[in-house]
Image (tube, rainbow, N blue to C red; front, side, top):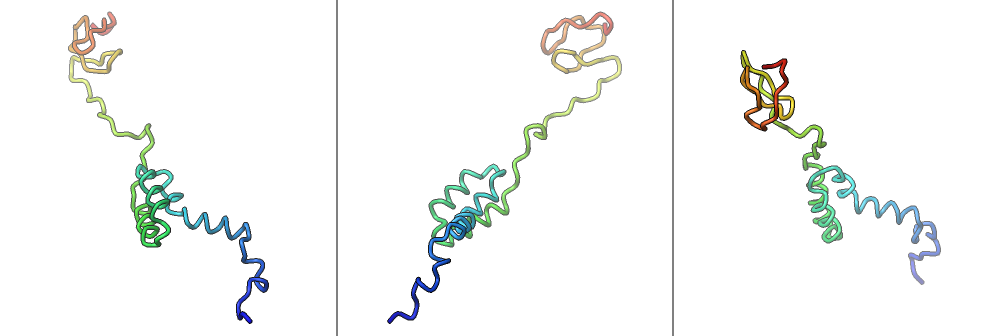
Length: 116
């Protein structure tokens, strides 16, 4: 006679709740890395080596330490420098133009009459 039998524990045998919970825990590193630039690499490591537990721990640590991806609106760009005395900004390209110029030296756009 078996000491342990599944007929005494029917709730734990392939119950959908525990199946979904185990899937979520297995893919927890990939879920935590969903907004990180290394998401694809972490997902592949989690998918291919997560079953070894060491691979899962490495993927979890990588997901927690990876820096979040910056939105496109926050990407660092060079801020325009203030115009020097007697100069102004071109309305087409935003570069500084010398006072009295008829055309922009950078893009060649015609400058408005009021700024010449």
